[in-house]
Length: 464
Image 1: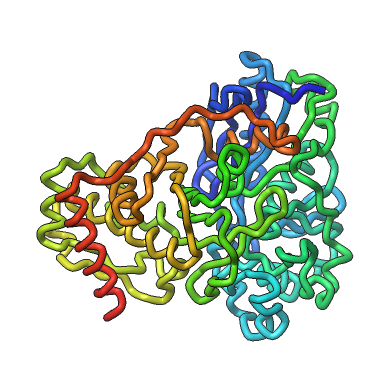
Image 2: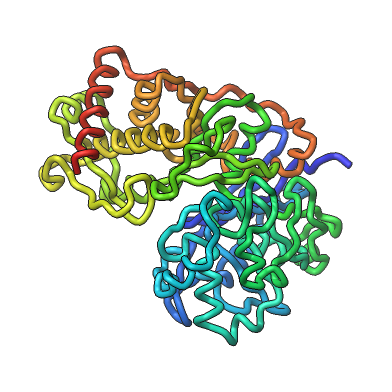
């Protein structure tokens, strides 16, 4: 059976959520509707408004199906989220992973969790370690936990809403959960030790369609009764998938959005340091991929006061000449410099928006270069998401790494397109995407200035 060509993708980002219709052969989004990802503050703890999202999905797909010949549905969603599912509804609300509630049981959980050598999963604060979420929910809300029939990873919760089939999937299980052994490709010892294994839904291969859309939904949305649904994929791994199909390792992919996650494809996991927010993610084929992360999109918003402006050469040169820089960590809860307090070299209130924007772009490039060193990144660099449109960031990164940086500035790749490619990834016969624009680095004089700037940045970080 031929793979679907126009795929509706439910794309659940941490900040924004969208439904995109993806032309799979052309690897492009042809229609998009969006809504904010709302965190509700009522109830027992901050949680995602899944009722709002489901209503949005229903309305958006119904509208889009009137215009586009949708013949498949896929899902992608952010990591660090778990769903406790009862018989027909949530047993407990879906915890916002930025909530610090699970930290109350840190000592108890740390005594249970496996060694980093087993899971390649660092211990992160709040709900960022999924095992810590489950432990806290089990002990803080025993009645709700007792109603749990299945534990599901987040993309697969939406797949259950679509098909009625409960599953888990490796890209979300392999995203700092403590629940998975990447090398052994099986559950970690934590799952057996806690007894959670009886609740874990079966693991499904994301490259194999999960099942048909529920007939009631198909009729309500104006779709075919036999509409195939993919089980879904973790969002950063969705961004990575087109490149796994198109490129030969080694190469490095940087998936950007709220998070900036660097994937060293073709590297080994021997150099990983859990104290610096490095880990082994797991790609859609089940292979561990050395990775490093920091909350780059959130940090850029904070550094620019969420009002970045276009910058010209004079702003860049002034930042370089005066050594205007930001030292990490703007978001201290994650990244390679966790626990540090950010510091500007100059009073930011005296800087123009252009100078702040330029300094922020160079900060992101220096942080990304640091991440590359921690994971043994090699080969050409591919930047996905919002950072791909930041010319200073891409060119500075190219100059600092000595590698050409290919910037994916359109929808030829990305989370929605990667999720759509699940329908053809098993055969690895994806149509090749067009060549990406290349950022080859800054001109010689400015490249030398950036190299000196980065060296001073590193020295200042080491001295802090």
